[in-house]
Length: 183
Figure 1: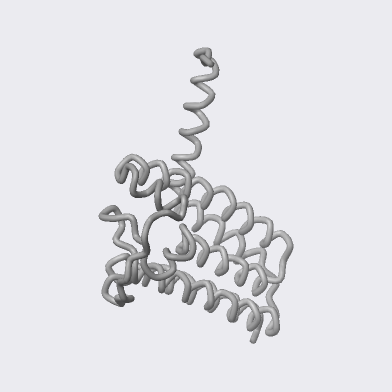
Figure 2: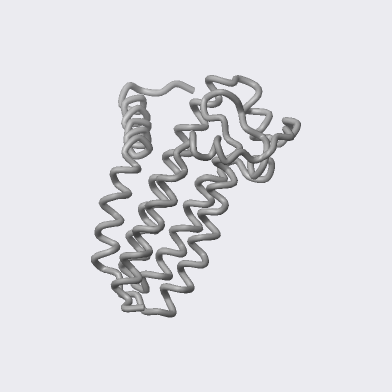
């Protein structure tokens, strides 16, 4: 099967959009967060419920950040032995917690749309990079055929992976929602 030049351009344009979404997801996240914080309508109950869920998400992220060796290997220890993208799983759980804390359908739509598009783009981009960099090894991991690796959690590794930024973002966002809730 051959592709016309128009089809190739459409594929390239699609890949370019995915790459840009992945690259600018943090910047887009700040914009989404500002909009969400302005539109939020939290109360004490929604804030407490959302906080518990968001903290669980951050714990998943912290666990993953304490295992991953970004760009150096196909990490298979800790949560990577169970799911391919535990950092993004943690981010998604945090996002759900934020949606609950914010108590707004508009905020849920903003956060859900942001997470769906940017995290899927990031996963596709990272998987393509890992497929290229670790030919065979990453493919085996994706199929579940790679042996697990036993390595303990490292707080220093989590800090080297700058997980403190996610912790700070969660703390600031939830503090603002707490203030908005009058809790």
